[in-house]
Every structure is written in C-alpha cells, then in structure tokens.
Image 1 (cartoon, one colour):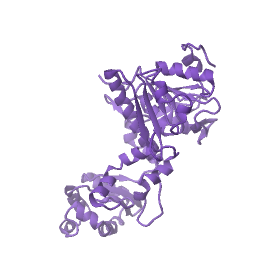
Image 2 (cartoon, helix red, strand yellow):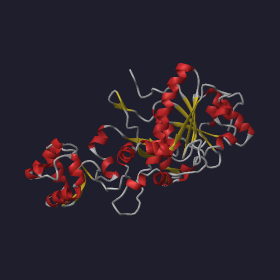
Image 3 (cartoon, helix red, strand yellow):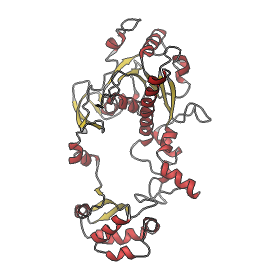
Image 4 (cartoon, helix red, strand yellow):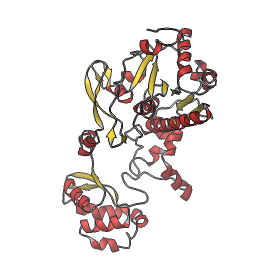
Length: 386
C-alpha cells in the first residue's frame, strides 16, 4: 500500500536559499526523504531573517523547511569541503539553487561529484538554466514574472503591470524539481546511473502557461490581461454584487442555462450574442453588465447559495484568514500545529496531499541553524563536527 513516506530511505543534500530550492526540498521531505539542509555557519539560509519573526525565529523560513535537518559547513574551507564530499558519497540527491558556475567553483559541480558518487541525482534550480545567453543572469520571482510573460496577462486591461501575489515562479520551479527528482530516482534504480537535472524558473513558469502560449501559437496574437475574466469562456469571472464580489464560472452551455434560470432571465439563453462559450467570451463585457445589474440587488452569500443549489461552480472572495478557517480546509487537516526551535508553537499549512484518505502529519519541526551537526557528521570518516 502506497504511503506518504514513499521516499523513505532517500537522502537529499540541500544547498539552497529562500524559496524555489527549499520548497523543492520540503516536498521531498514531506514524502519521507531525509533532507539535510547544508547552510553557511554565518547566518544560514537568508530566509531565516525574513519577517514575521516570532521570538527570534522566522515563520517564513519555518513554512518551507519542516521535516529537514540542518548542518553548517563553510564550503570554502578545505576541511568542511571534505565533509561535504563525504556526505555526497552516501547521498542519493543533491539539490542546489545557486547561480550557474558557483557550485563548480566550490568543487561541487555535477561533473566533479559524479566522480565521488555516480548514482547521484543532481538537481540545479536557477533563473534561466545552466547554459545559454542568460544563464549567468540572476533572478527573483518578480523578474521572472516579468520575463516569462506572466505579468502581461495579469491585471486589468490598460492597467499597470501587476505581479501575482503568490511567488508562482519560485514554487513552479520547486514543483518541477521535485517531480523530476522523483522520476530520476526511479531511473537510477533501473540503470544505476545518476543524472543532472536543469530546472529554470523561466522554463517552469512558461511550462504552466500552456494555455497562453498555445493561444499565441494558434492566433499569432499576444494574450491580454482580462482582470478576473477568461479569454475563451463566459460567464467566468468575479462579479460585483450588493455587498462586494463573488466568483462564478459557468464553463459550458449546460451551466450557462442554469445561470439563466438562477437570475430569472431565460431569454438570455436565446440571445444571439451568447449561444456558446466562444460567443459569450467575445461579448463578455455586455454579459457582465447584464448580470451585475441583477447581482447588485442581493448579497454574495445569497447568490452563492442560489448558484450552489443549481450546481454552478462559484466561490466567495476569501482572504487567507477566511480560507484557512474554511470547513473544507479543516476537514482535510491541512492546517497543523508547528513547533519552532525556540519552543514557540505556531501553525502552518501542511502538505495538501492525502494518501489513503489521510493527510500526512509533520514528522519534524524546522531546524535551528546547525542543529544536527553532531548526528549527521558523527559517522563520516572525518569524525564529528561541531
């Protein structure tokens, strides 16, 4: 029976900072891998300094580093580099998100480490990839949202460029990395040879934009920002009502017929502007005006109840405080208690994956800097390191 500890027995060395790499490492740790986070003794992962700080400990850092162990190594020091090489010899995976060239200068590049461990799965996450004209350029989520085209379709028509509020480029790269690592481990078991995985934030962000790139390939025209609306379907957006807004998506003709019944306008089903999703999308401004003139007379809760009863997908416009308290989130056991290294108990959003109708519990709190030096280094040929 498949369990959430499917990667139990896999050891991962994580040499990463901030978001994309640590998120990738956490996904592997959630699946049972032993993730050893290798940090610089002076400060460690820079995310450790990000607010909110609770009694000296970053809750941002905690949210991306559960189920991991932390060791400190100065990788420019020969003795510490030797310890790192010893760790590599017994590891299954090395994960890093430095600029291309940095690991080679540290004598930790893939070609160098495969001589130590030919079965090593080595995953590099970077802004633009390990080769090519932009490979040496750095990048953060903001710059990749701009570069990838994501900002060109985010926001309202004619408005200023808008960044997606969630760092989607970081986390898309982390997700691709975890998927690729898991796939490569299967190949190692089959063939006995490791590999170097090149994950770029640019490629990952463009990869999840398949609908936008295919729209360009099919029409020769750039997709445009539409606010909350959809380029190929309507009604499919956020609507204004008496006390705010709500979202409603009638993604096919059957649902559109249901919308017409809910708003008591059966005539709209026969309107020549609205016969199918493509026509409704082409005339969605007029359709929105018609519907909002009706929605303005009742509250969001009222309309959500009516549409839910009719089987039309709809949702409130939640804040994070609201959705984290939603009964569905509570039922799935996604919000769990998390102890910080200083003993303070906070909460976190745990793994959203469920195996056999059960959400994984958090096995290990996020680590203090260098907390596991003694136990990790104890069995290495170089001896203990403190």
